Length: 82
Image (cartoon, rainbow, N blue to C red; front, side):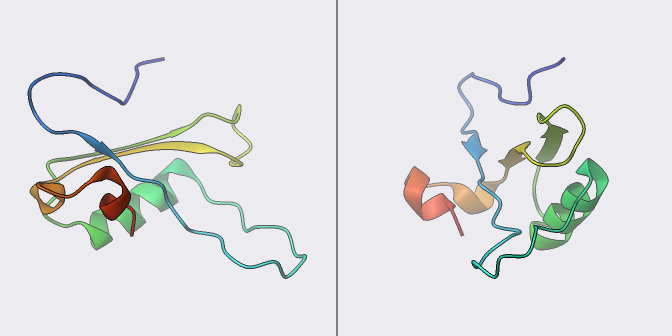
């Protein structure tokens, strides 16, 4: 599988998605790679690159998310997390 995270001289920032929150005791809704990519594209319309990969074996429990955007330039990694 192609890795979404790249390393070179350009600034790349990983983004941890907070699509689920709370302790209601209910199971989290199931999202697909396409759902998350659509959400991130709407949230970061100026992003140069957006990558989403289901790393949970296809069940939608865990995703690797990558967003490359000038919006993150100059921010520390902690400030990048919305």
